[in-house]
Image (tube, rainbow, N blue to C red; front, side, top):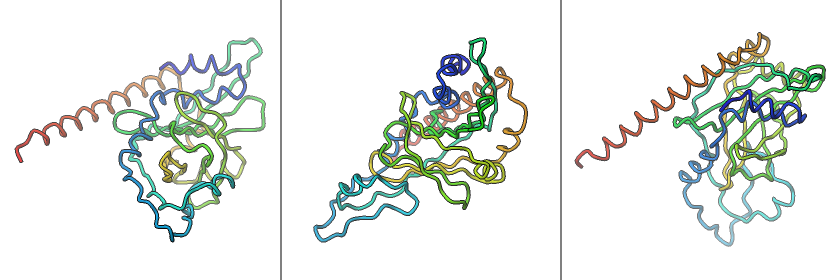
Length: 255
C-alpha cells in the first residue's frame, strides 16, 4: 500500500489526513478481533442470585445507558495479543494544493506474526496550528460504546470515544498536551485499551523507546520508509511460513 497516495487523498480534507499512517498497514486489522474471539471460551450463564458484574479496573468505562443494560454475567478475561513492532517513524507531507500546509506524522504500529497490523498510534501536527492530535487505531469488532483508553506508564489514564471507523479500523483521538508529550518522550510504554466484541478488555502496548529521537529528529525519507516496511513485511511472512511448517510437521508426526 502506497502511503503517499493515501496522504494525497487525505491531506486536503482536514481531520481526514489523520488516517495516513494507520492506514498504511491496517488493511486487514480485524483479524485480531477474530483471534480474540477464537481464544475466548464461551461465557457461562450467571446464577440468578449473582450480583451484577463490575467492569475491570483497567477497562474503559461504558456509557451510563450501556451499563444499565449490561446483563449480570461473568466478566470475560482480559485479552492480550503478542505483537511485533515497527520503529517509531516521522515523515512530513504536503497536499497538492498551492496553499497546502505541511503536516508531520510520528507513528508506530504493532503486528501479529502473519503481518496483520492490529494497533497503530500516530501524532499529527499540521503546520501553523497549535493543536496536535494523537490518533490510535484499533481493529473493527470493538464495542464502540466504550471508546478507548490510553495510559503512559503509571501516569493518569485518559479516555476518548471513537471518532470514525473505516475498513481498516476504528479511530480515537486524544489532544497532545505538553504534559502528554513529555510523558511520551520519557516513558517506557504507551498502553491502549479497549473492549472487544465479547466484552473482554483488550490491552495493546506500544513501546516508547526511540519515540523522542524520532519525534525530535528529521523526517524519514519516504523511500526509506517504504523499504523498511517492505523488509518488515518480508520478515513477518517468513516467520508465518516457518510457523505453518512447524505446525504441519507436528500434525503429521505419529502419535
